[in-house]
View 1 (spheres, helix red, strand yellow):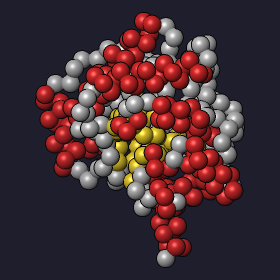
View 2 (cartoon, helix red, strand yellow):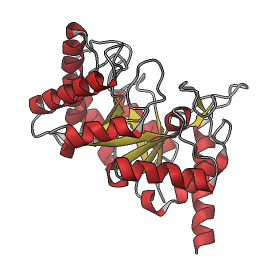
View 3 (cartoon, one colour):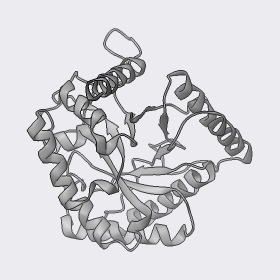
View 4 (cartoon, helix red, strand yellow):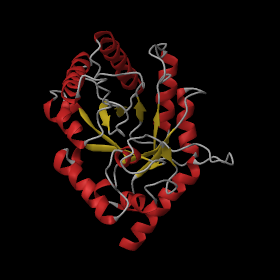
Length: 291
């Protein structure tokens, strides 16, 4: 069965995200290690690091993951923004390494008018610089597929393939596939044939062996809308059948699958537990049918 988890808040302390994940029965968890909407952050104190590592070690959670700051843009043609992005990304990697995390998820960035080719070249340059400055780190950077809003890169599998095929640091990287994002980018998932076709394209261009983690989200917007709006499992345009297939796909039974779905419904009910239970039900039913 896949490793199910959710992105959880660190508002009450990094280590409390571990307890919150455990109370939800999660197998994995994703966090921010700082405020994702700010460039700067206080350094992690030795006490914070120790608390987090102890809590993680005492839990059953695997493949602990962080998502980096939304401000980072390694594709930017602006020299100042690019330099600031490199510095901030190095800090993100240092924080993830200090906490003993397995993965750091990042968006490729936006070319802001320079064009896809120039933007991808800039991203590759940035990843190589960051990894050179973080030599020997164990944490693996995962490039996240994107919905393609504005000039964002990563909404075509070809973009991801270009980065991983050309970057000298690719052996220290992998891919995070967000179901909402790929659907909004124009890759259908709803029917069995759509699902098989989309993952065949991914395998042909990128390789499913490079796919290390999923963000499991339905989409509030239509196929090909290139608008990033997450919905609860089975409550959006993708629908439940794609998620049934995903959680029972033999290729992905050991992959972390992390929710980034809305935390509450319109009535104010907490939804992480509901969505996790639905994914577990899909997986259990699939295993029972296979048996």
